[in-house]
Length: 396
Image 1 (cartoon, rainbow, N blue to C red):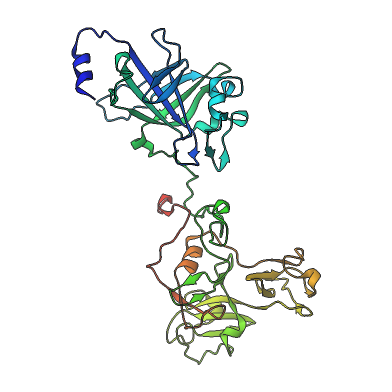
Image 2 (cartoon, helix red, strand yellow):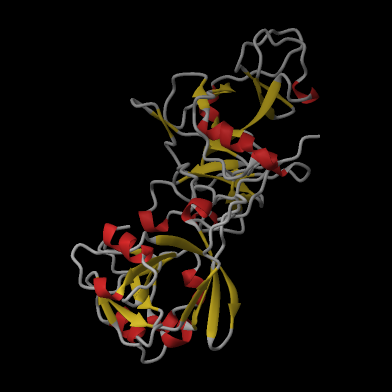
C-alpha cells in the first residue's frame, strides 16, 4: 500500500470515493497475453458507468462480496461473492458478450474454447478472482496507487437463481488453485487411463500420467526394451527369447530368473538355489509368465476353457493379443480386424504392483527389443506414476 493511501485512511474523513475492481480469469489463456480476463466493478457510489483504471476498462455490475474479514482463530476465510447471473448476461447483447467475441478473447476450459454462446457457470469453478481497491482520485495515477490486491479462487457455486449467482471463494494458499479433491481419492486402484499419456500420442490427446508406451517402453540411454504385462501382473514374454525351457524337476536346483514349465505353464524362479519348491504351490519361489508368438495367417490358435489365461497370445503391430475363440487365422480374423476373435493381452491390473512391474523392471539378460527378459527383482529407484493414494488405506 502506498504512502498516499496510508495517509488518506488515517484521516477521519476521506474526500474521495472508494472503488472496488474485480478481474476474473476464466479458463486458460491460449495466447499468453492475458486475453482470458473479464474486468468489472461493483457500481457503488452511484458510479454505474464503465471505469478505466490501470489501462483496463471495468464494466459496472451488481456485486456483493462478504466474509473477507480476518480472524485470529487460525481459520482461513471463505468469502462469498454474489453477482448478477453472468451466464444469462453472456448469452445476451451485453458488453461482456462483446468482450468475449471481439476477436481478443482466447480462453479454454478443459481444452474446449470458452465462448459466450456455450458459456456455463461451471466454467468459472477453479478460476482466479482478483479484487483491487483504490480511491477515485487515484484513478489516473501513474504508477497506480491502490490497496494490496486480494486474490481468491472460485471453489464452488453456492447458490444460483435466474437473477443472481453466489460463489464460495478460497484463498490461493488454501487450495493452491485446485479443487479439493481435484480427482477422486482411491487408495488401492490407479485411476489413470492405461498408456493415456504415452509419447506416441499428440500432446492434446494425452490423458493422465501413465506414459507407458506400446513398445520400446524401457530406455537405458543406449538400448530400448519391450515389456508386456497382463492384468494379473504376469509378464508376457516372447517364446523364442526364452530358449530351451525344460519341465520342472524336484531334484534340480534352479538359479534366480531361470525358467521351467509344468502342465504347459511357464514359471520364472524368484530365488537362487531354488530346489524342491513346486511352482504350483504358490508365488513365494516362482512367478507365472505367459508367452507369445508373432501372429501369422494360416495358424491355429487355441483357447483353454478352464483357464482363459492359457489361451494363445500373439504379437501384431507392437500389440499383444489373447485369443477368445479357437480358430485358424486369416486376414479377416486378425487382431484389430477380427474383434470377436481377440482381446488385448497387455492390460494394466491397476494395482501398485502393476506399476512396479513395468516402470521398475530390470533385465535378467542383456537382450534388447522384444527379446527382453525381465528379472523377478525390481529397481526401487524408478519413480512410479501411480494414480491411487495408498496412504489413504486403513491399516488393519
